[in-house]
Image 1: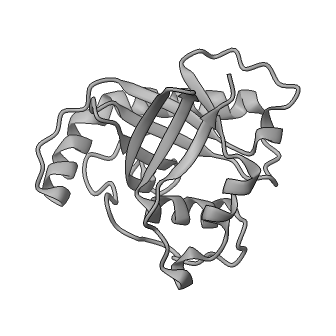
Image 2 (image 1 turned 180 degrees about the vertical axis):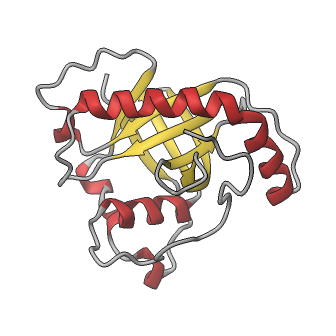
Length: 184
């Protein structure tokens, strides 16, 4: 696989802004991206705000491998987030492998992503560590072993799901971050 070294589609809407299915992974992805940030609740007094700056970020020259959501936290950790919807038929082990492969590729092109970030946002940034997360409905994790400690397994509480599955584009409601919770 040949890695991309520019034009990572940072900070822009590309593709369909309103996918055909309201609760599809693409629709959830767009709405989360438009919120611009998520809050990861890791416990009662432990949370991390992640500023999202890309969705479907391509890694190769073709659009064959793309990271669902990319962001960073206050310590400039680079977050690679893989989304899974209720309809996902993928096994957790496949998603973990996919995310680990993305991490390897991003390590190789991290400096290129930083250059593109500077060009796009006029902000010089050096990402520190790479963090990985899977964001899926809580039921996606039922009965599965969450044994890769390098990945955060995240979910959204049922009453919060509407925040990014309803058509927020028409309602122009992106003023609050989306709160997600750690499964472990």
